[in-house]
Length: 373
Image (tube, rainbow, N blue to C red; front, top):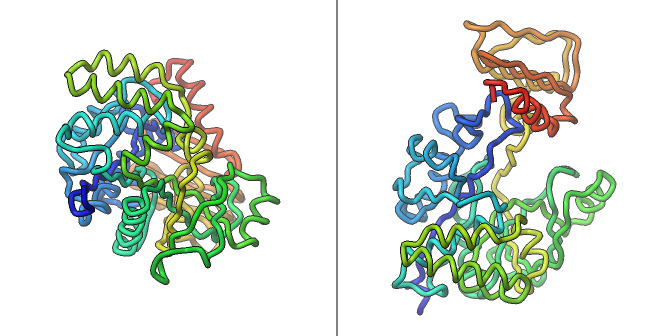
């Protein structure tokens, strides 16, 4: 089929519980439904709104868990309710993308895998300059469609951040694209490095942050899976057939047999035909509390504050008063590099460099039967 007949589909991965944003994020109010980076829109609605000017809402899908699907539909993120697709169980990002591929093939029986092109985004990114973002996505989708490639999006690093994976791209002379949006061949993927290695990556100039965005035709996705993970490509075919026949139980059974593995480990690190678009739009992952310092303005001492807390002689802190100072007054003095979060029924205090440990707090609260999770 020709390029004009390709159906472009937006996919937003939103299955996480956002435990690292406790106590603001809860089981019944996960991070993607919070207005963290925009006071009027949830992060999920922001993700949908970024895509809709280039992909109609009826062609945007949210892939999430059974537990969250109903909450997301109730929140009305701006797409048809039936486009909120629930995975039968937890199988990480490789499973999520296999399931949505099967769902799309089953729900568009008139189309071949060659004629459906995906733009995979996540619901926990803070992204500026939306027009440039969409221009970059269009370049990525064109590369995926014309070169039958798996395409990812690499962000130019502005610091040796150890919280991201890195992509090594082949020299810019091999790039194809406009001057501001370059398309590179990918040499290697690297997992989250230590500080010394991250500094080497940034100084080298050929390494980019792995944004977790992906672009491919379903046919390209299945072709690469056939080579490196044939059990997943066979699973996609089996699930598509089951879903087309209306047998959700069989599809769930097939899905449950897939490995619980990320798409990077399962596919991207081993695929042959991988390209990368260089992102020049403002991009920040919003995965843990300290990341808010990259989104909100800071005071003269590097503090990020929400809800009008009072800070005295404190530096580089994140202080988030969800209730606002009219309901709860929050004050800190003489502390540095700390995260303090206050809600109506919970308080979190943790060093910035241990913000990842919040999920362990949530685990223990669950074991204690606490209502505040």
